[in-house]
Amino acid sequence: MDMNADALSDSPVIEIRDLHKSYGPLEVIKGVSLTARRGQVISLIGSSGSGKSTLLRCCNLLELSQQGDILFKGDAVRWRGQGGDRTPADRAQVTRLRTNLSMVFQQFNLWSHMTILQNVMEAPVTVLRQNPAEVEPRARALLAKVGIGDKAGAWPAQLSGGQQQRAAIARALCMQPDALLLDEPTSALDPELQQEVVKVIKDLAAEHRTMILVTHDMRLAADVSDHVVFLHQGLIEEQGPPGQLFGAPQSERLRQFLSATMVA
Image 1 (tube, rainbow, N blue to C red):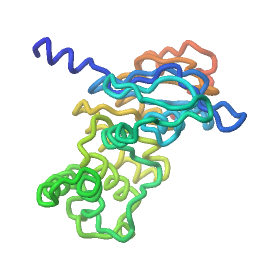
Image 2 (cartoon, rainbow, N blue to C red):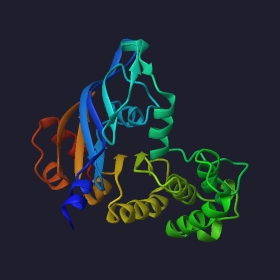
Image 3 (cartoon, one colour):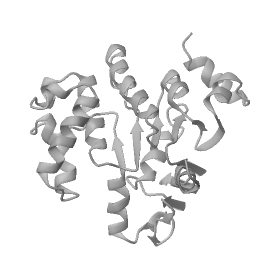
Image 4 (cartoon, helix red, strand yellow):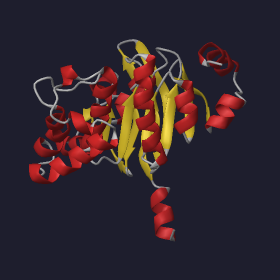
């Protein structure tokens, strides 16, 4: 790999600097900084209410923070106003950021009135104005990639939960994003169906796709992550490589959390 490629692979896709997020008097994120570099998989772990999903949703401005910086590929989000009145100043910048940071939700959010193929094609065609004739082969290839190529003509209601979530991942990938944001992608599924989705996520990690993953599945976090962040009460309590965090946790709070969540 040449020096330019090295520099590219090390370049940040998403940077969060001293982020604060409140809902009224309740401060959920209390000053968090995070960097996801190209090809890196970061897992956010922690108890319910620790701020994981809120932090993820702040990355692509589905939630608006009151303080701190958000940078996408070095370009800082521009704001107007301060504190609770702070809103993005550049709508085109918001659209550009959201189309390049594809989100996969806990609930699959497929459009029930569209076939699976139509679901996967919809955003590139309507948001990015891409030619349907060019999008369709890519969409079909992605459905095959996640193991449901034979379901292209099916309706969402005809698919299992695991199949619907895999379709949602294909839909996110069809936007050809710079990063995937996955918010508890397996938690709404039965254990057997979870493994279908886990396999897809592991395959994507093996391809060095940039991902930020919120999960309660410690095995998944340990298997796919380059870096794990443990959030506690809106702050980063501990972070590091998965081997370090899961093998030799430093903080008592993380040790307690892992003893309660890790399955032998």
